[in-house]
View 1 (cartoon, rainbow, N blue to C red):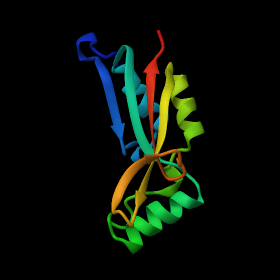
View 2: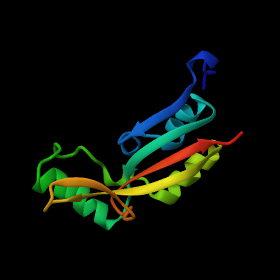
View 3: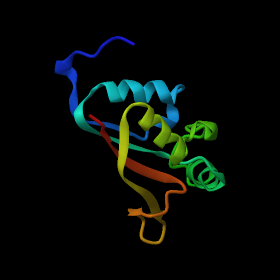
View 4: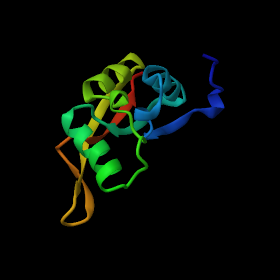
Amino acid sequence: MEEIDPRERFDIVLAMEVVEHVTDVGMFLKRCASMLKPNGLMVVSTLNRNWKSFALAIVGAEYVLRWLPRGTHEWNKFVTPDELTKYLLDNRLVITEQTGVVYSPFADKWSLSSDMDVNYMVVAEGMV
């Protein structure tokens, strides 16, 4: 991996709804982490890998509600919170905050939640 120019390092790096689409999550997050300034923050949002995420994010969102084109997601590429934690720790990042993101069809609204079964977000800080 080529070295990042220190002038191209950032206080915050966002990886929002992309991790579940990359081929090599470890390499992707390594590259993202290399672009952080010391004590920088990385914010990651992604999909958990379990039966509930398959039912809601793939069957529900792609096939029933048609919010997304069919085939947008591959369930085997979803990343569990434990896997994401390991990838971040491998890159000297420690999770400081985490939350679930849930959709309420009755209110037609997305909100933060303790339920990380389907969508979730983490904030990780670089260790010095």
